[in-house]
Length: 171
Image (cartoon, rainbow, N blue to C red; front, side, top):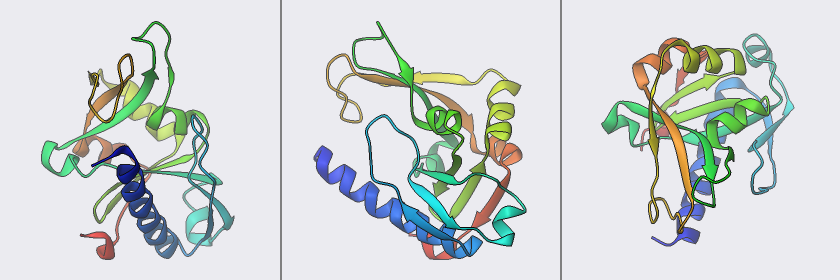
């Protein structure tokens, strides 16, 4: 699979996640144009009572972690580099939280929703194993890499603000 094919397939899957989220919370949402290094996939255009009872975020960041079904852990990215760790910057899940997005992690039909408070509680409550990607993994070129916490799904489920199931996402 080429990098472009990967982005195309994740964009389609993200749109499916957004549709399931929109349906569950009875929201109107709008896709935010992609900008490298920025967080936020969708903006809430019209909120619902169901959503407002749980969240105050106006931007949603969708993440998918299908591998967690097998590994029983989420890969929660927190930083990246493009120069062999001489410099680094926040990325992934942590960037979304820092930008006050509602973080929604989808695992097929299961959705785990985190605001900043709950995400920080989960990350800071214990020391999580860390993983670093290597060159040629996940399309990383020489000098590029990401770091992430490896968080057990059961642990994340205890800390998330809200968990729901969207049966139409089961495949």
